[in-house]
Image 1 (cartoon, one colour):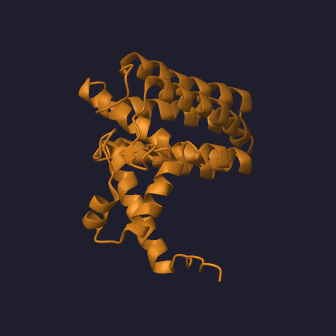
Image 2 (cartoon, helix red, strand yellow):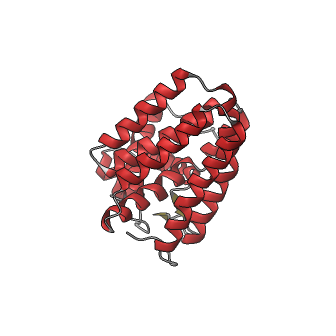
Image 3 (cartoon, helix red, strand yellow):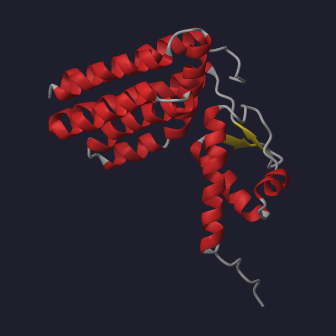
Length: 230
């Protein structure tokens, strides 16, 4: 007699796993849970008042996001980003987002200008650095979505949460060094918006690439060579 196959997860368990994933993801991206922190299933199960099954599903989802990693003993810890990781993430973004900006500029409308301008205004008013980082990523995702290129969007989503994790760290570091992250972010995004709204695809691509590369240059000058732990 063949062994019984495990039953598929119920809708309630899937919902719980998604809720736990969201809470852990937010805590990791914001730096509340530090890089290198161990995430033990029993501890998380007690914290969330859940069985280990949805906890395991949440950790697998976070591993797909690139936010945690499993070692040879199947233990989980929050991923630490090195300067090499930051450079790889940004080089991927340059390739993907410059293409997205080129495609988006060809179809840009006044409605897109209003939507992006509102996002930038919200960045300026962001009460926390976490909110600023999230709005920053949302703005970039808007451009990628507008490009209308499904495979490009899927590739970008593959680094989306690592992007926000590294960006949130950069914003915290800017604030620590008195670099005014709100002003820097808003000013650079207004320039990107101006060029996208001009309807010049090649200029939009170059401006987006320069925007990302400028942030990368600053980050690499500040980030430690060893994995980020703060």
